[in-house]
View 1: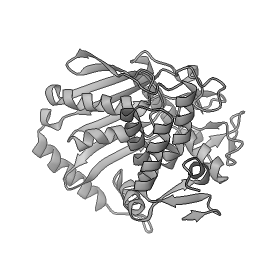
View 2: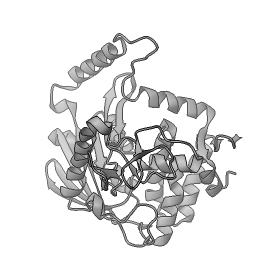
View 3: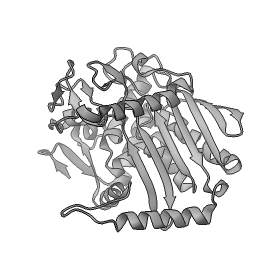
View 4: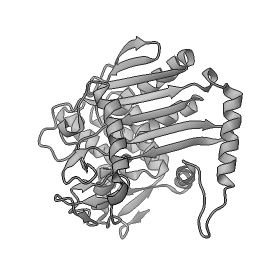
Length: 347
């Protein structure tokens, strides 16, 4: 179903997934890496994180064609300790390296209780929540983060410094979909600005700025996105962005935010960006124990949902909104922008 006025077309998830896989396959991506990338993009599109969903397939195909992304990466793993590992992504699709990193973290957390994996020589990995969720599905608490190219000023700053640098956490919840928190440390992701440009849709006030640091709502004049917290409390978002850089880049010896080749708009699409990521898994069996953890999660979420609300408001646990949206899209289809629809031969 095409809605030209909204600038979208709605596609059944199964068909959309097949088209995305086909586009990456045609671009030469290895089967293992394209399946990982498709899984991560579909995760984002199903949960309504459209800025990091299938709209990125065209970009990834362009980077595969230009040589920035290795079509057939060979992942290399180096265990540094019982709970610490480094994974070399061989400049392939970041989703492939990141899913493998979380798999390793979960495997080793079963032995050590906590395990972390740093990733080097990777590329853009999409929505961080996709990898945190892998830990939750394995019965563990998961954390995933990355740093990205500069597009967010410091608190009170007038020049790009940090990336949008997401932080994602997930935990298993007995009898329900996992608890899931996936947030940018900026007001919005820059990909949301790009999506609004595609849709020619105004941005909310107070989330983006022009080249001088002045706030704007026109996505076409937005050159930066502001730190989470706004003009008064943006130091919180800026500090959290620095935490993501510390774990993803400083700890792994990869590229700092200001040193990245821009993800989009750069003439050079052949030089790899050497992105770093960081994932962590925590096994509840090594702490108070599985039964106590599950009881605590159930009691916590039940009390959260029963908490008093203001008139006209609803209290939700992290992930509730996303799981509702995923169920709706599973039944009614996934809306994608027309530019992506054209690239996938759906328009």
